[in-house]
Length: 133
Figure 1 (cartoon, rainbow, N blue to C red):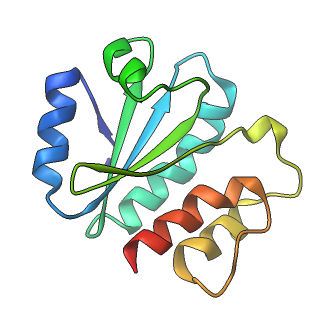
Figure 2: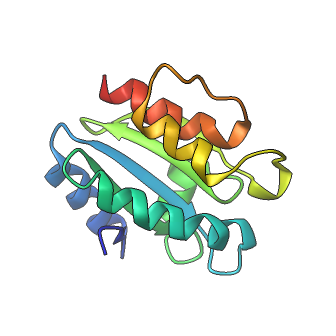
């Protein structure tokens, strides 16, 4: 599995350092969060596809309160985009509030910058593409 679980603040800092100039997508999640569970299979798949250009980290908000507070995470899942240890974009991603979003349209956003996001669910993934340009 290419999704890396963050164990502590020190582990988080180390993983950011090791990422170098690669884009890092940080998934702030909770084990009890339904939308977090819904998006996980897609994230696993995309982390495998993009493993050479993007680092995917998972931060359990209940186990890593210091990181969660530092980045002011208020809802889950929230995706934070970091490049060169600098916060690029952070958008909440509420699947239970989305209508009309599907996995296929999200996949298109990973591979084509000519397809602007049409639903809120696509915005974080579209942001990744823009950061990779």
